[in-house]
Length: 162
Image (cartoon, rainbow, N blue to C red):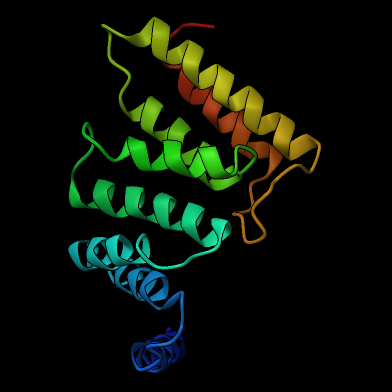
C-alpha cells in the first residue's frame, strides 16, 4: 500500500507541473477523489469541463463529478444530471449505468418503490444487454461480472416487488 501511495504522489507531482496537458484537471480531480478530497475533486472536475477533453474523458469527468458530490453528501440534488450528461455521450457504458442503478436503489422509499423498481429493472436490463453483447463504448470502462446482476435483483427483492 505504501508503494502505491508513493506512485500516486509521484504521478500527482508530475501532472501538477504539466500545464499543457489537456487532461491535467481531469487527472488532478481523480487524484483528489481517490484521496477523499471531494470538494477539491469537484473544483478540478469543473475546470476539466472547460478544457478541450475528448468525449471519453468528458463522460468520465461527469461520472466522477457525480461520485464526488455523492461522497460529499449531496445525494438528492443535482448530481444525477452529471450521469445523464455522461450517458448522452456514451449510452452503452457500465460505469454511468451502474451509478444510475445505485442512485435509484438508494433513493427507494415506500412512497416511490413501484416506480423506482421499474426504473431499476429497466436499467439492469440495459446494462445486462451491454454486458452480454460486449457493447461498452468506454475504452476504460469499469468491469462488472454476471454476479452484479444477481446482487441487484436480490436488493430489489427486499422491496418485495418483482
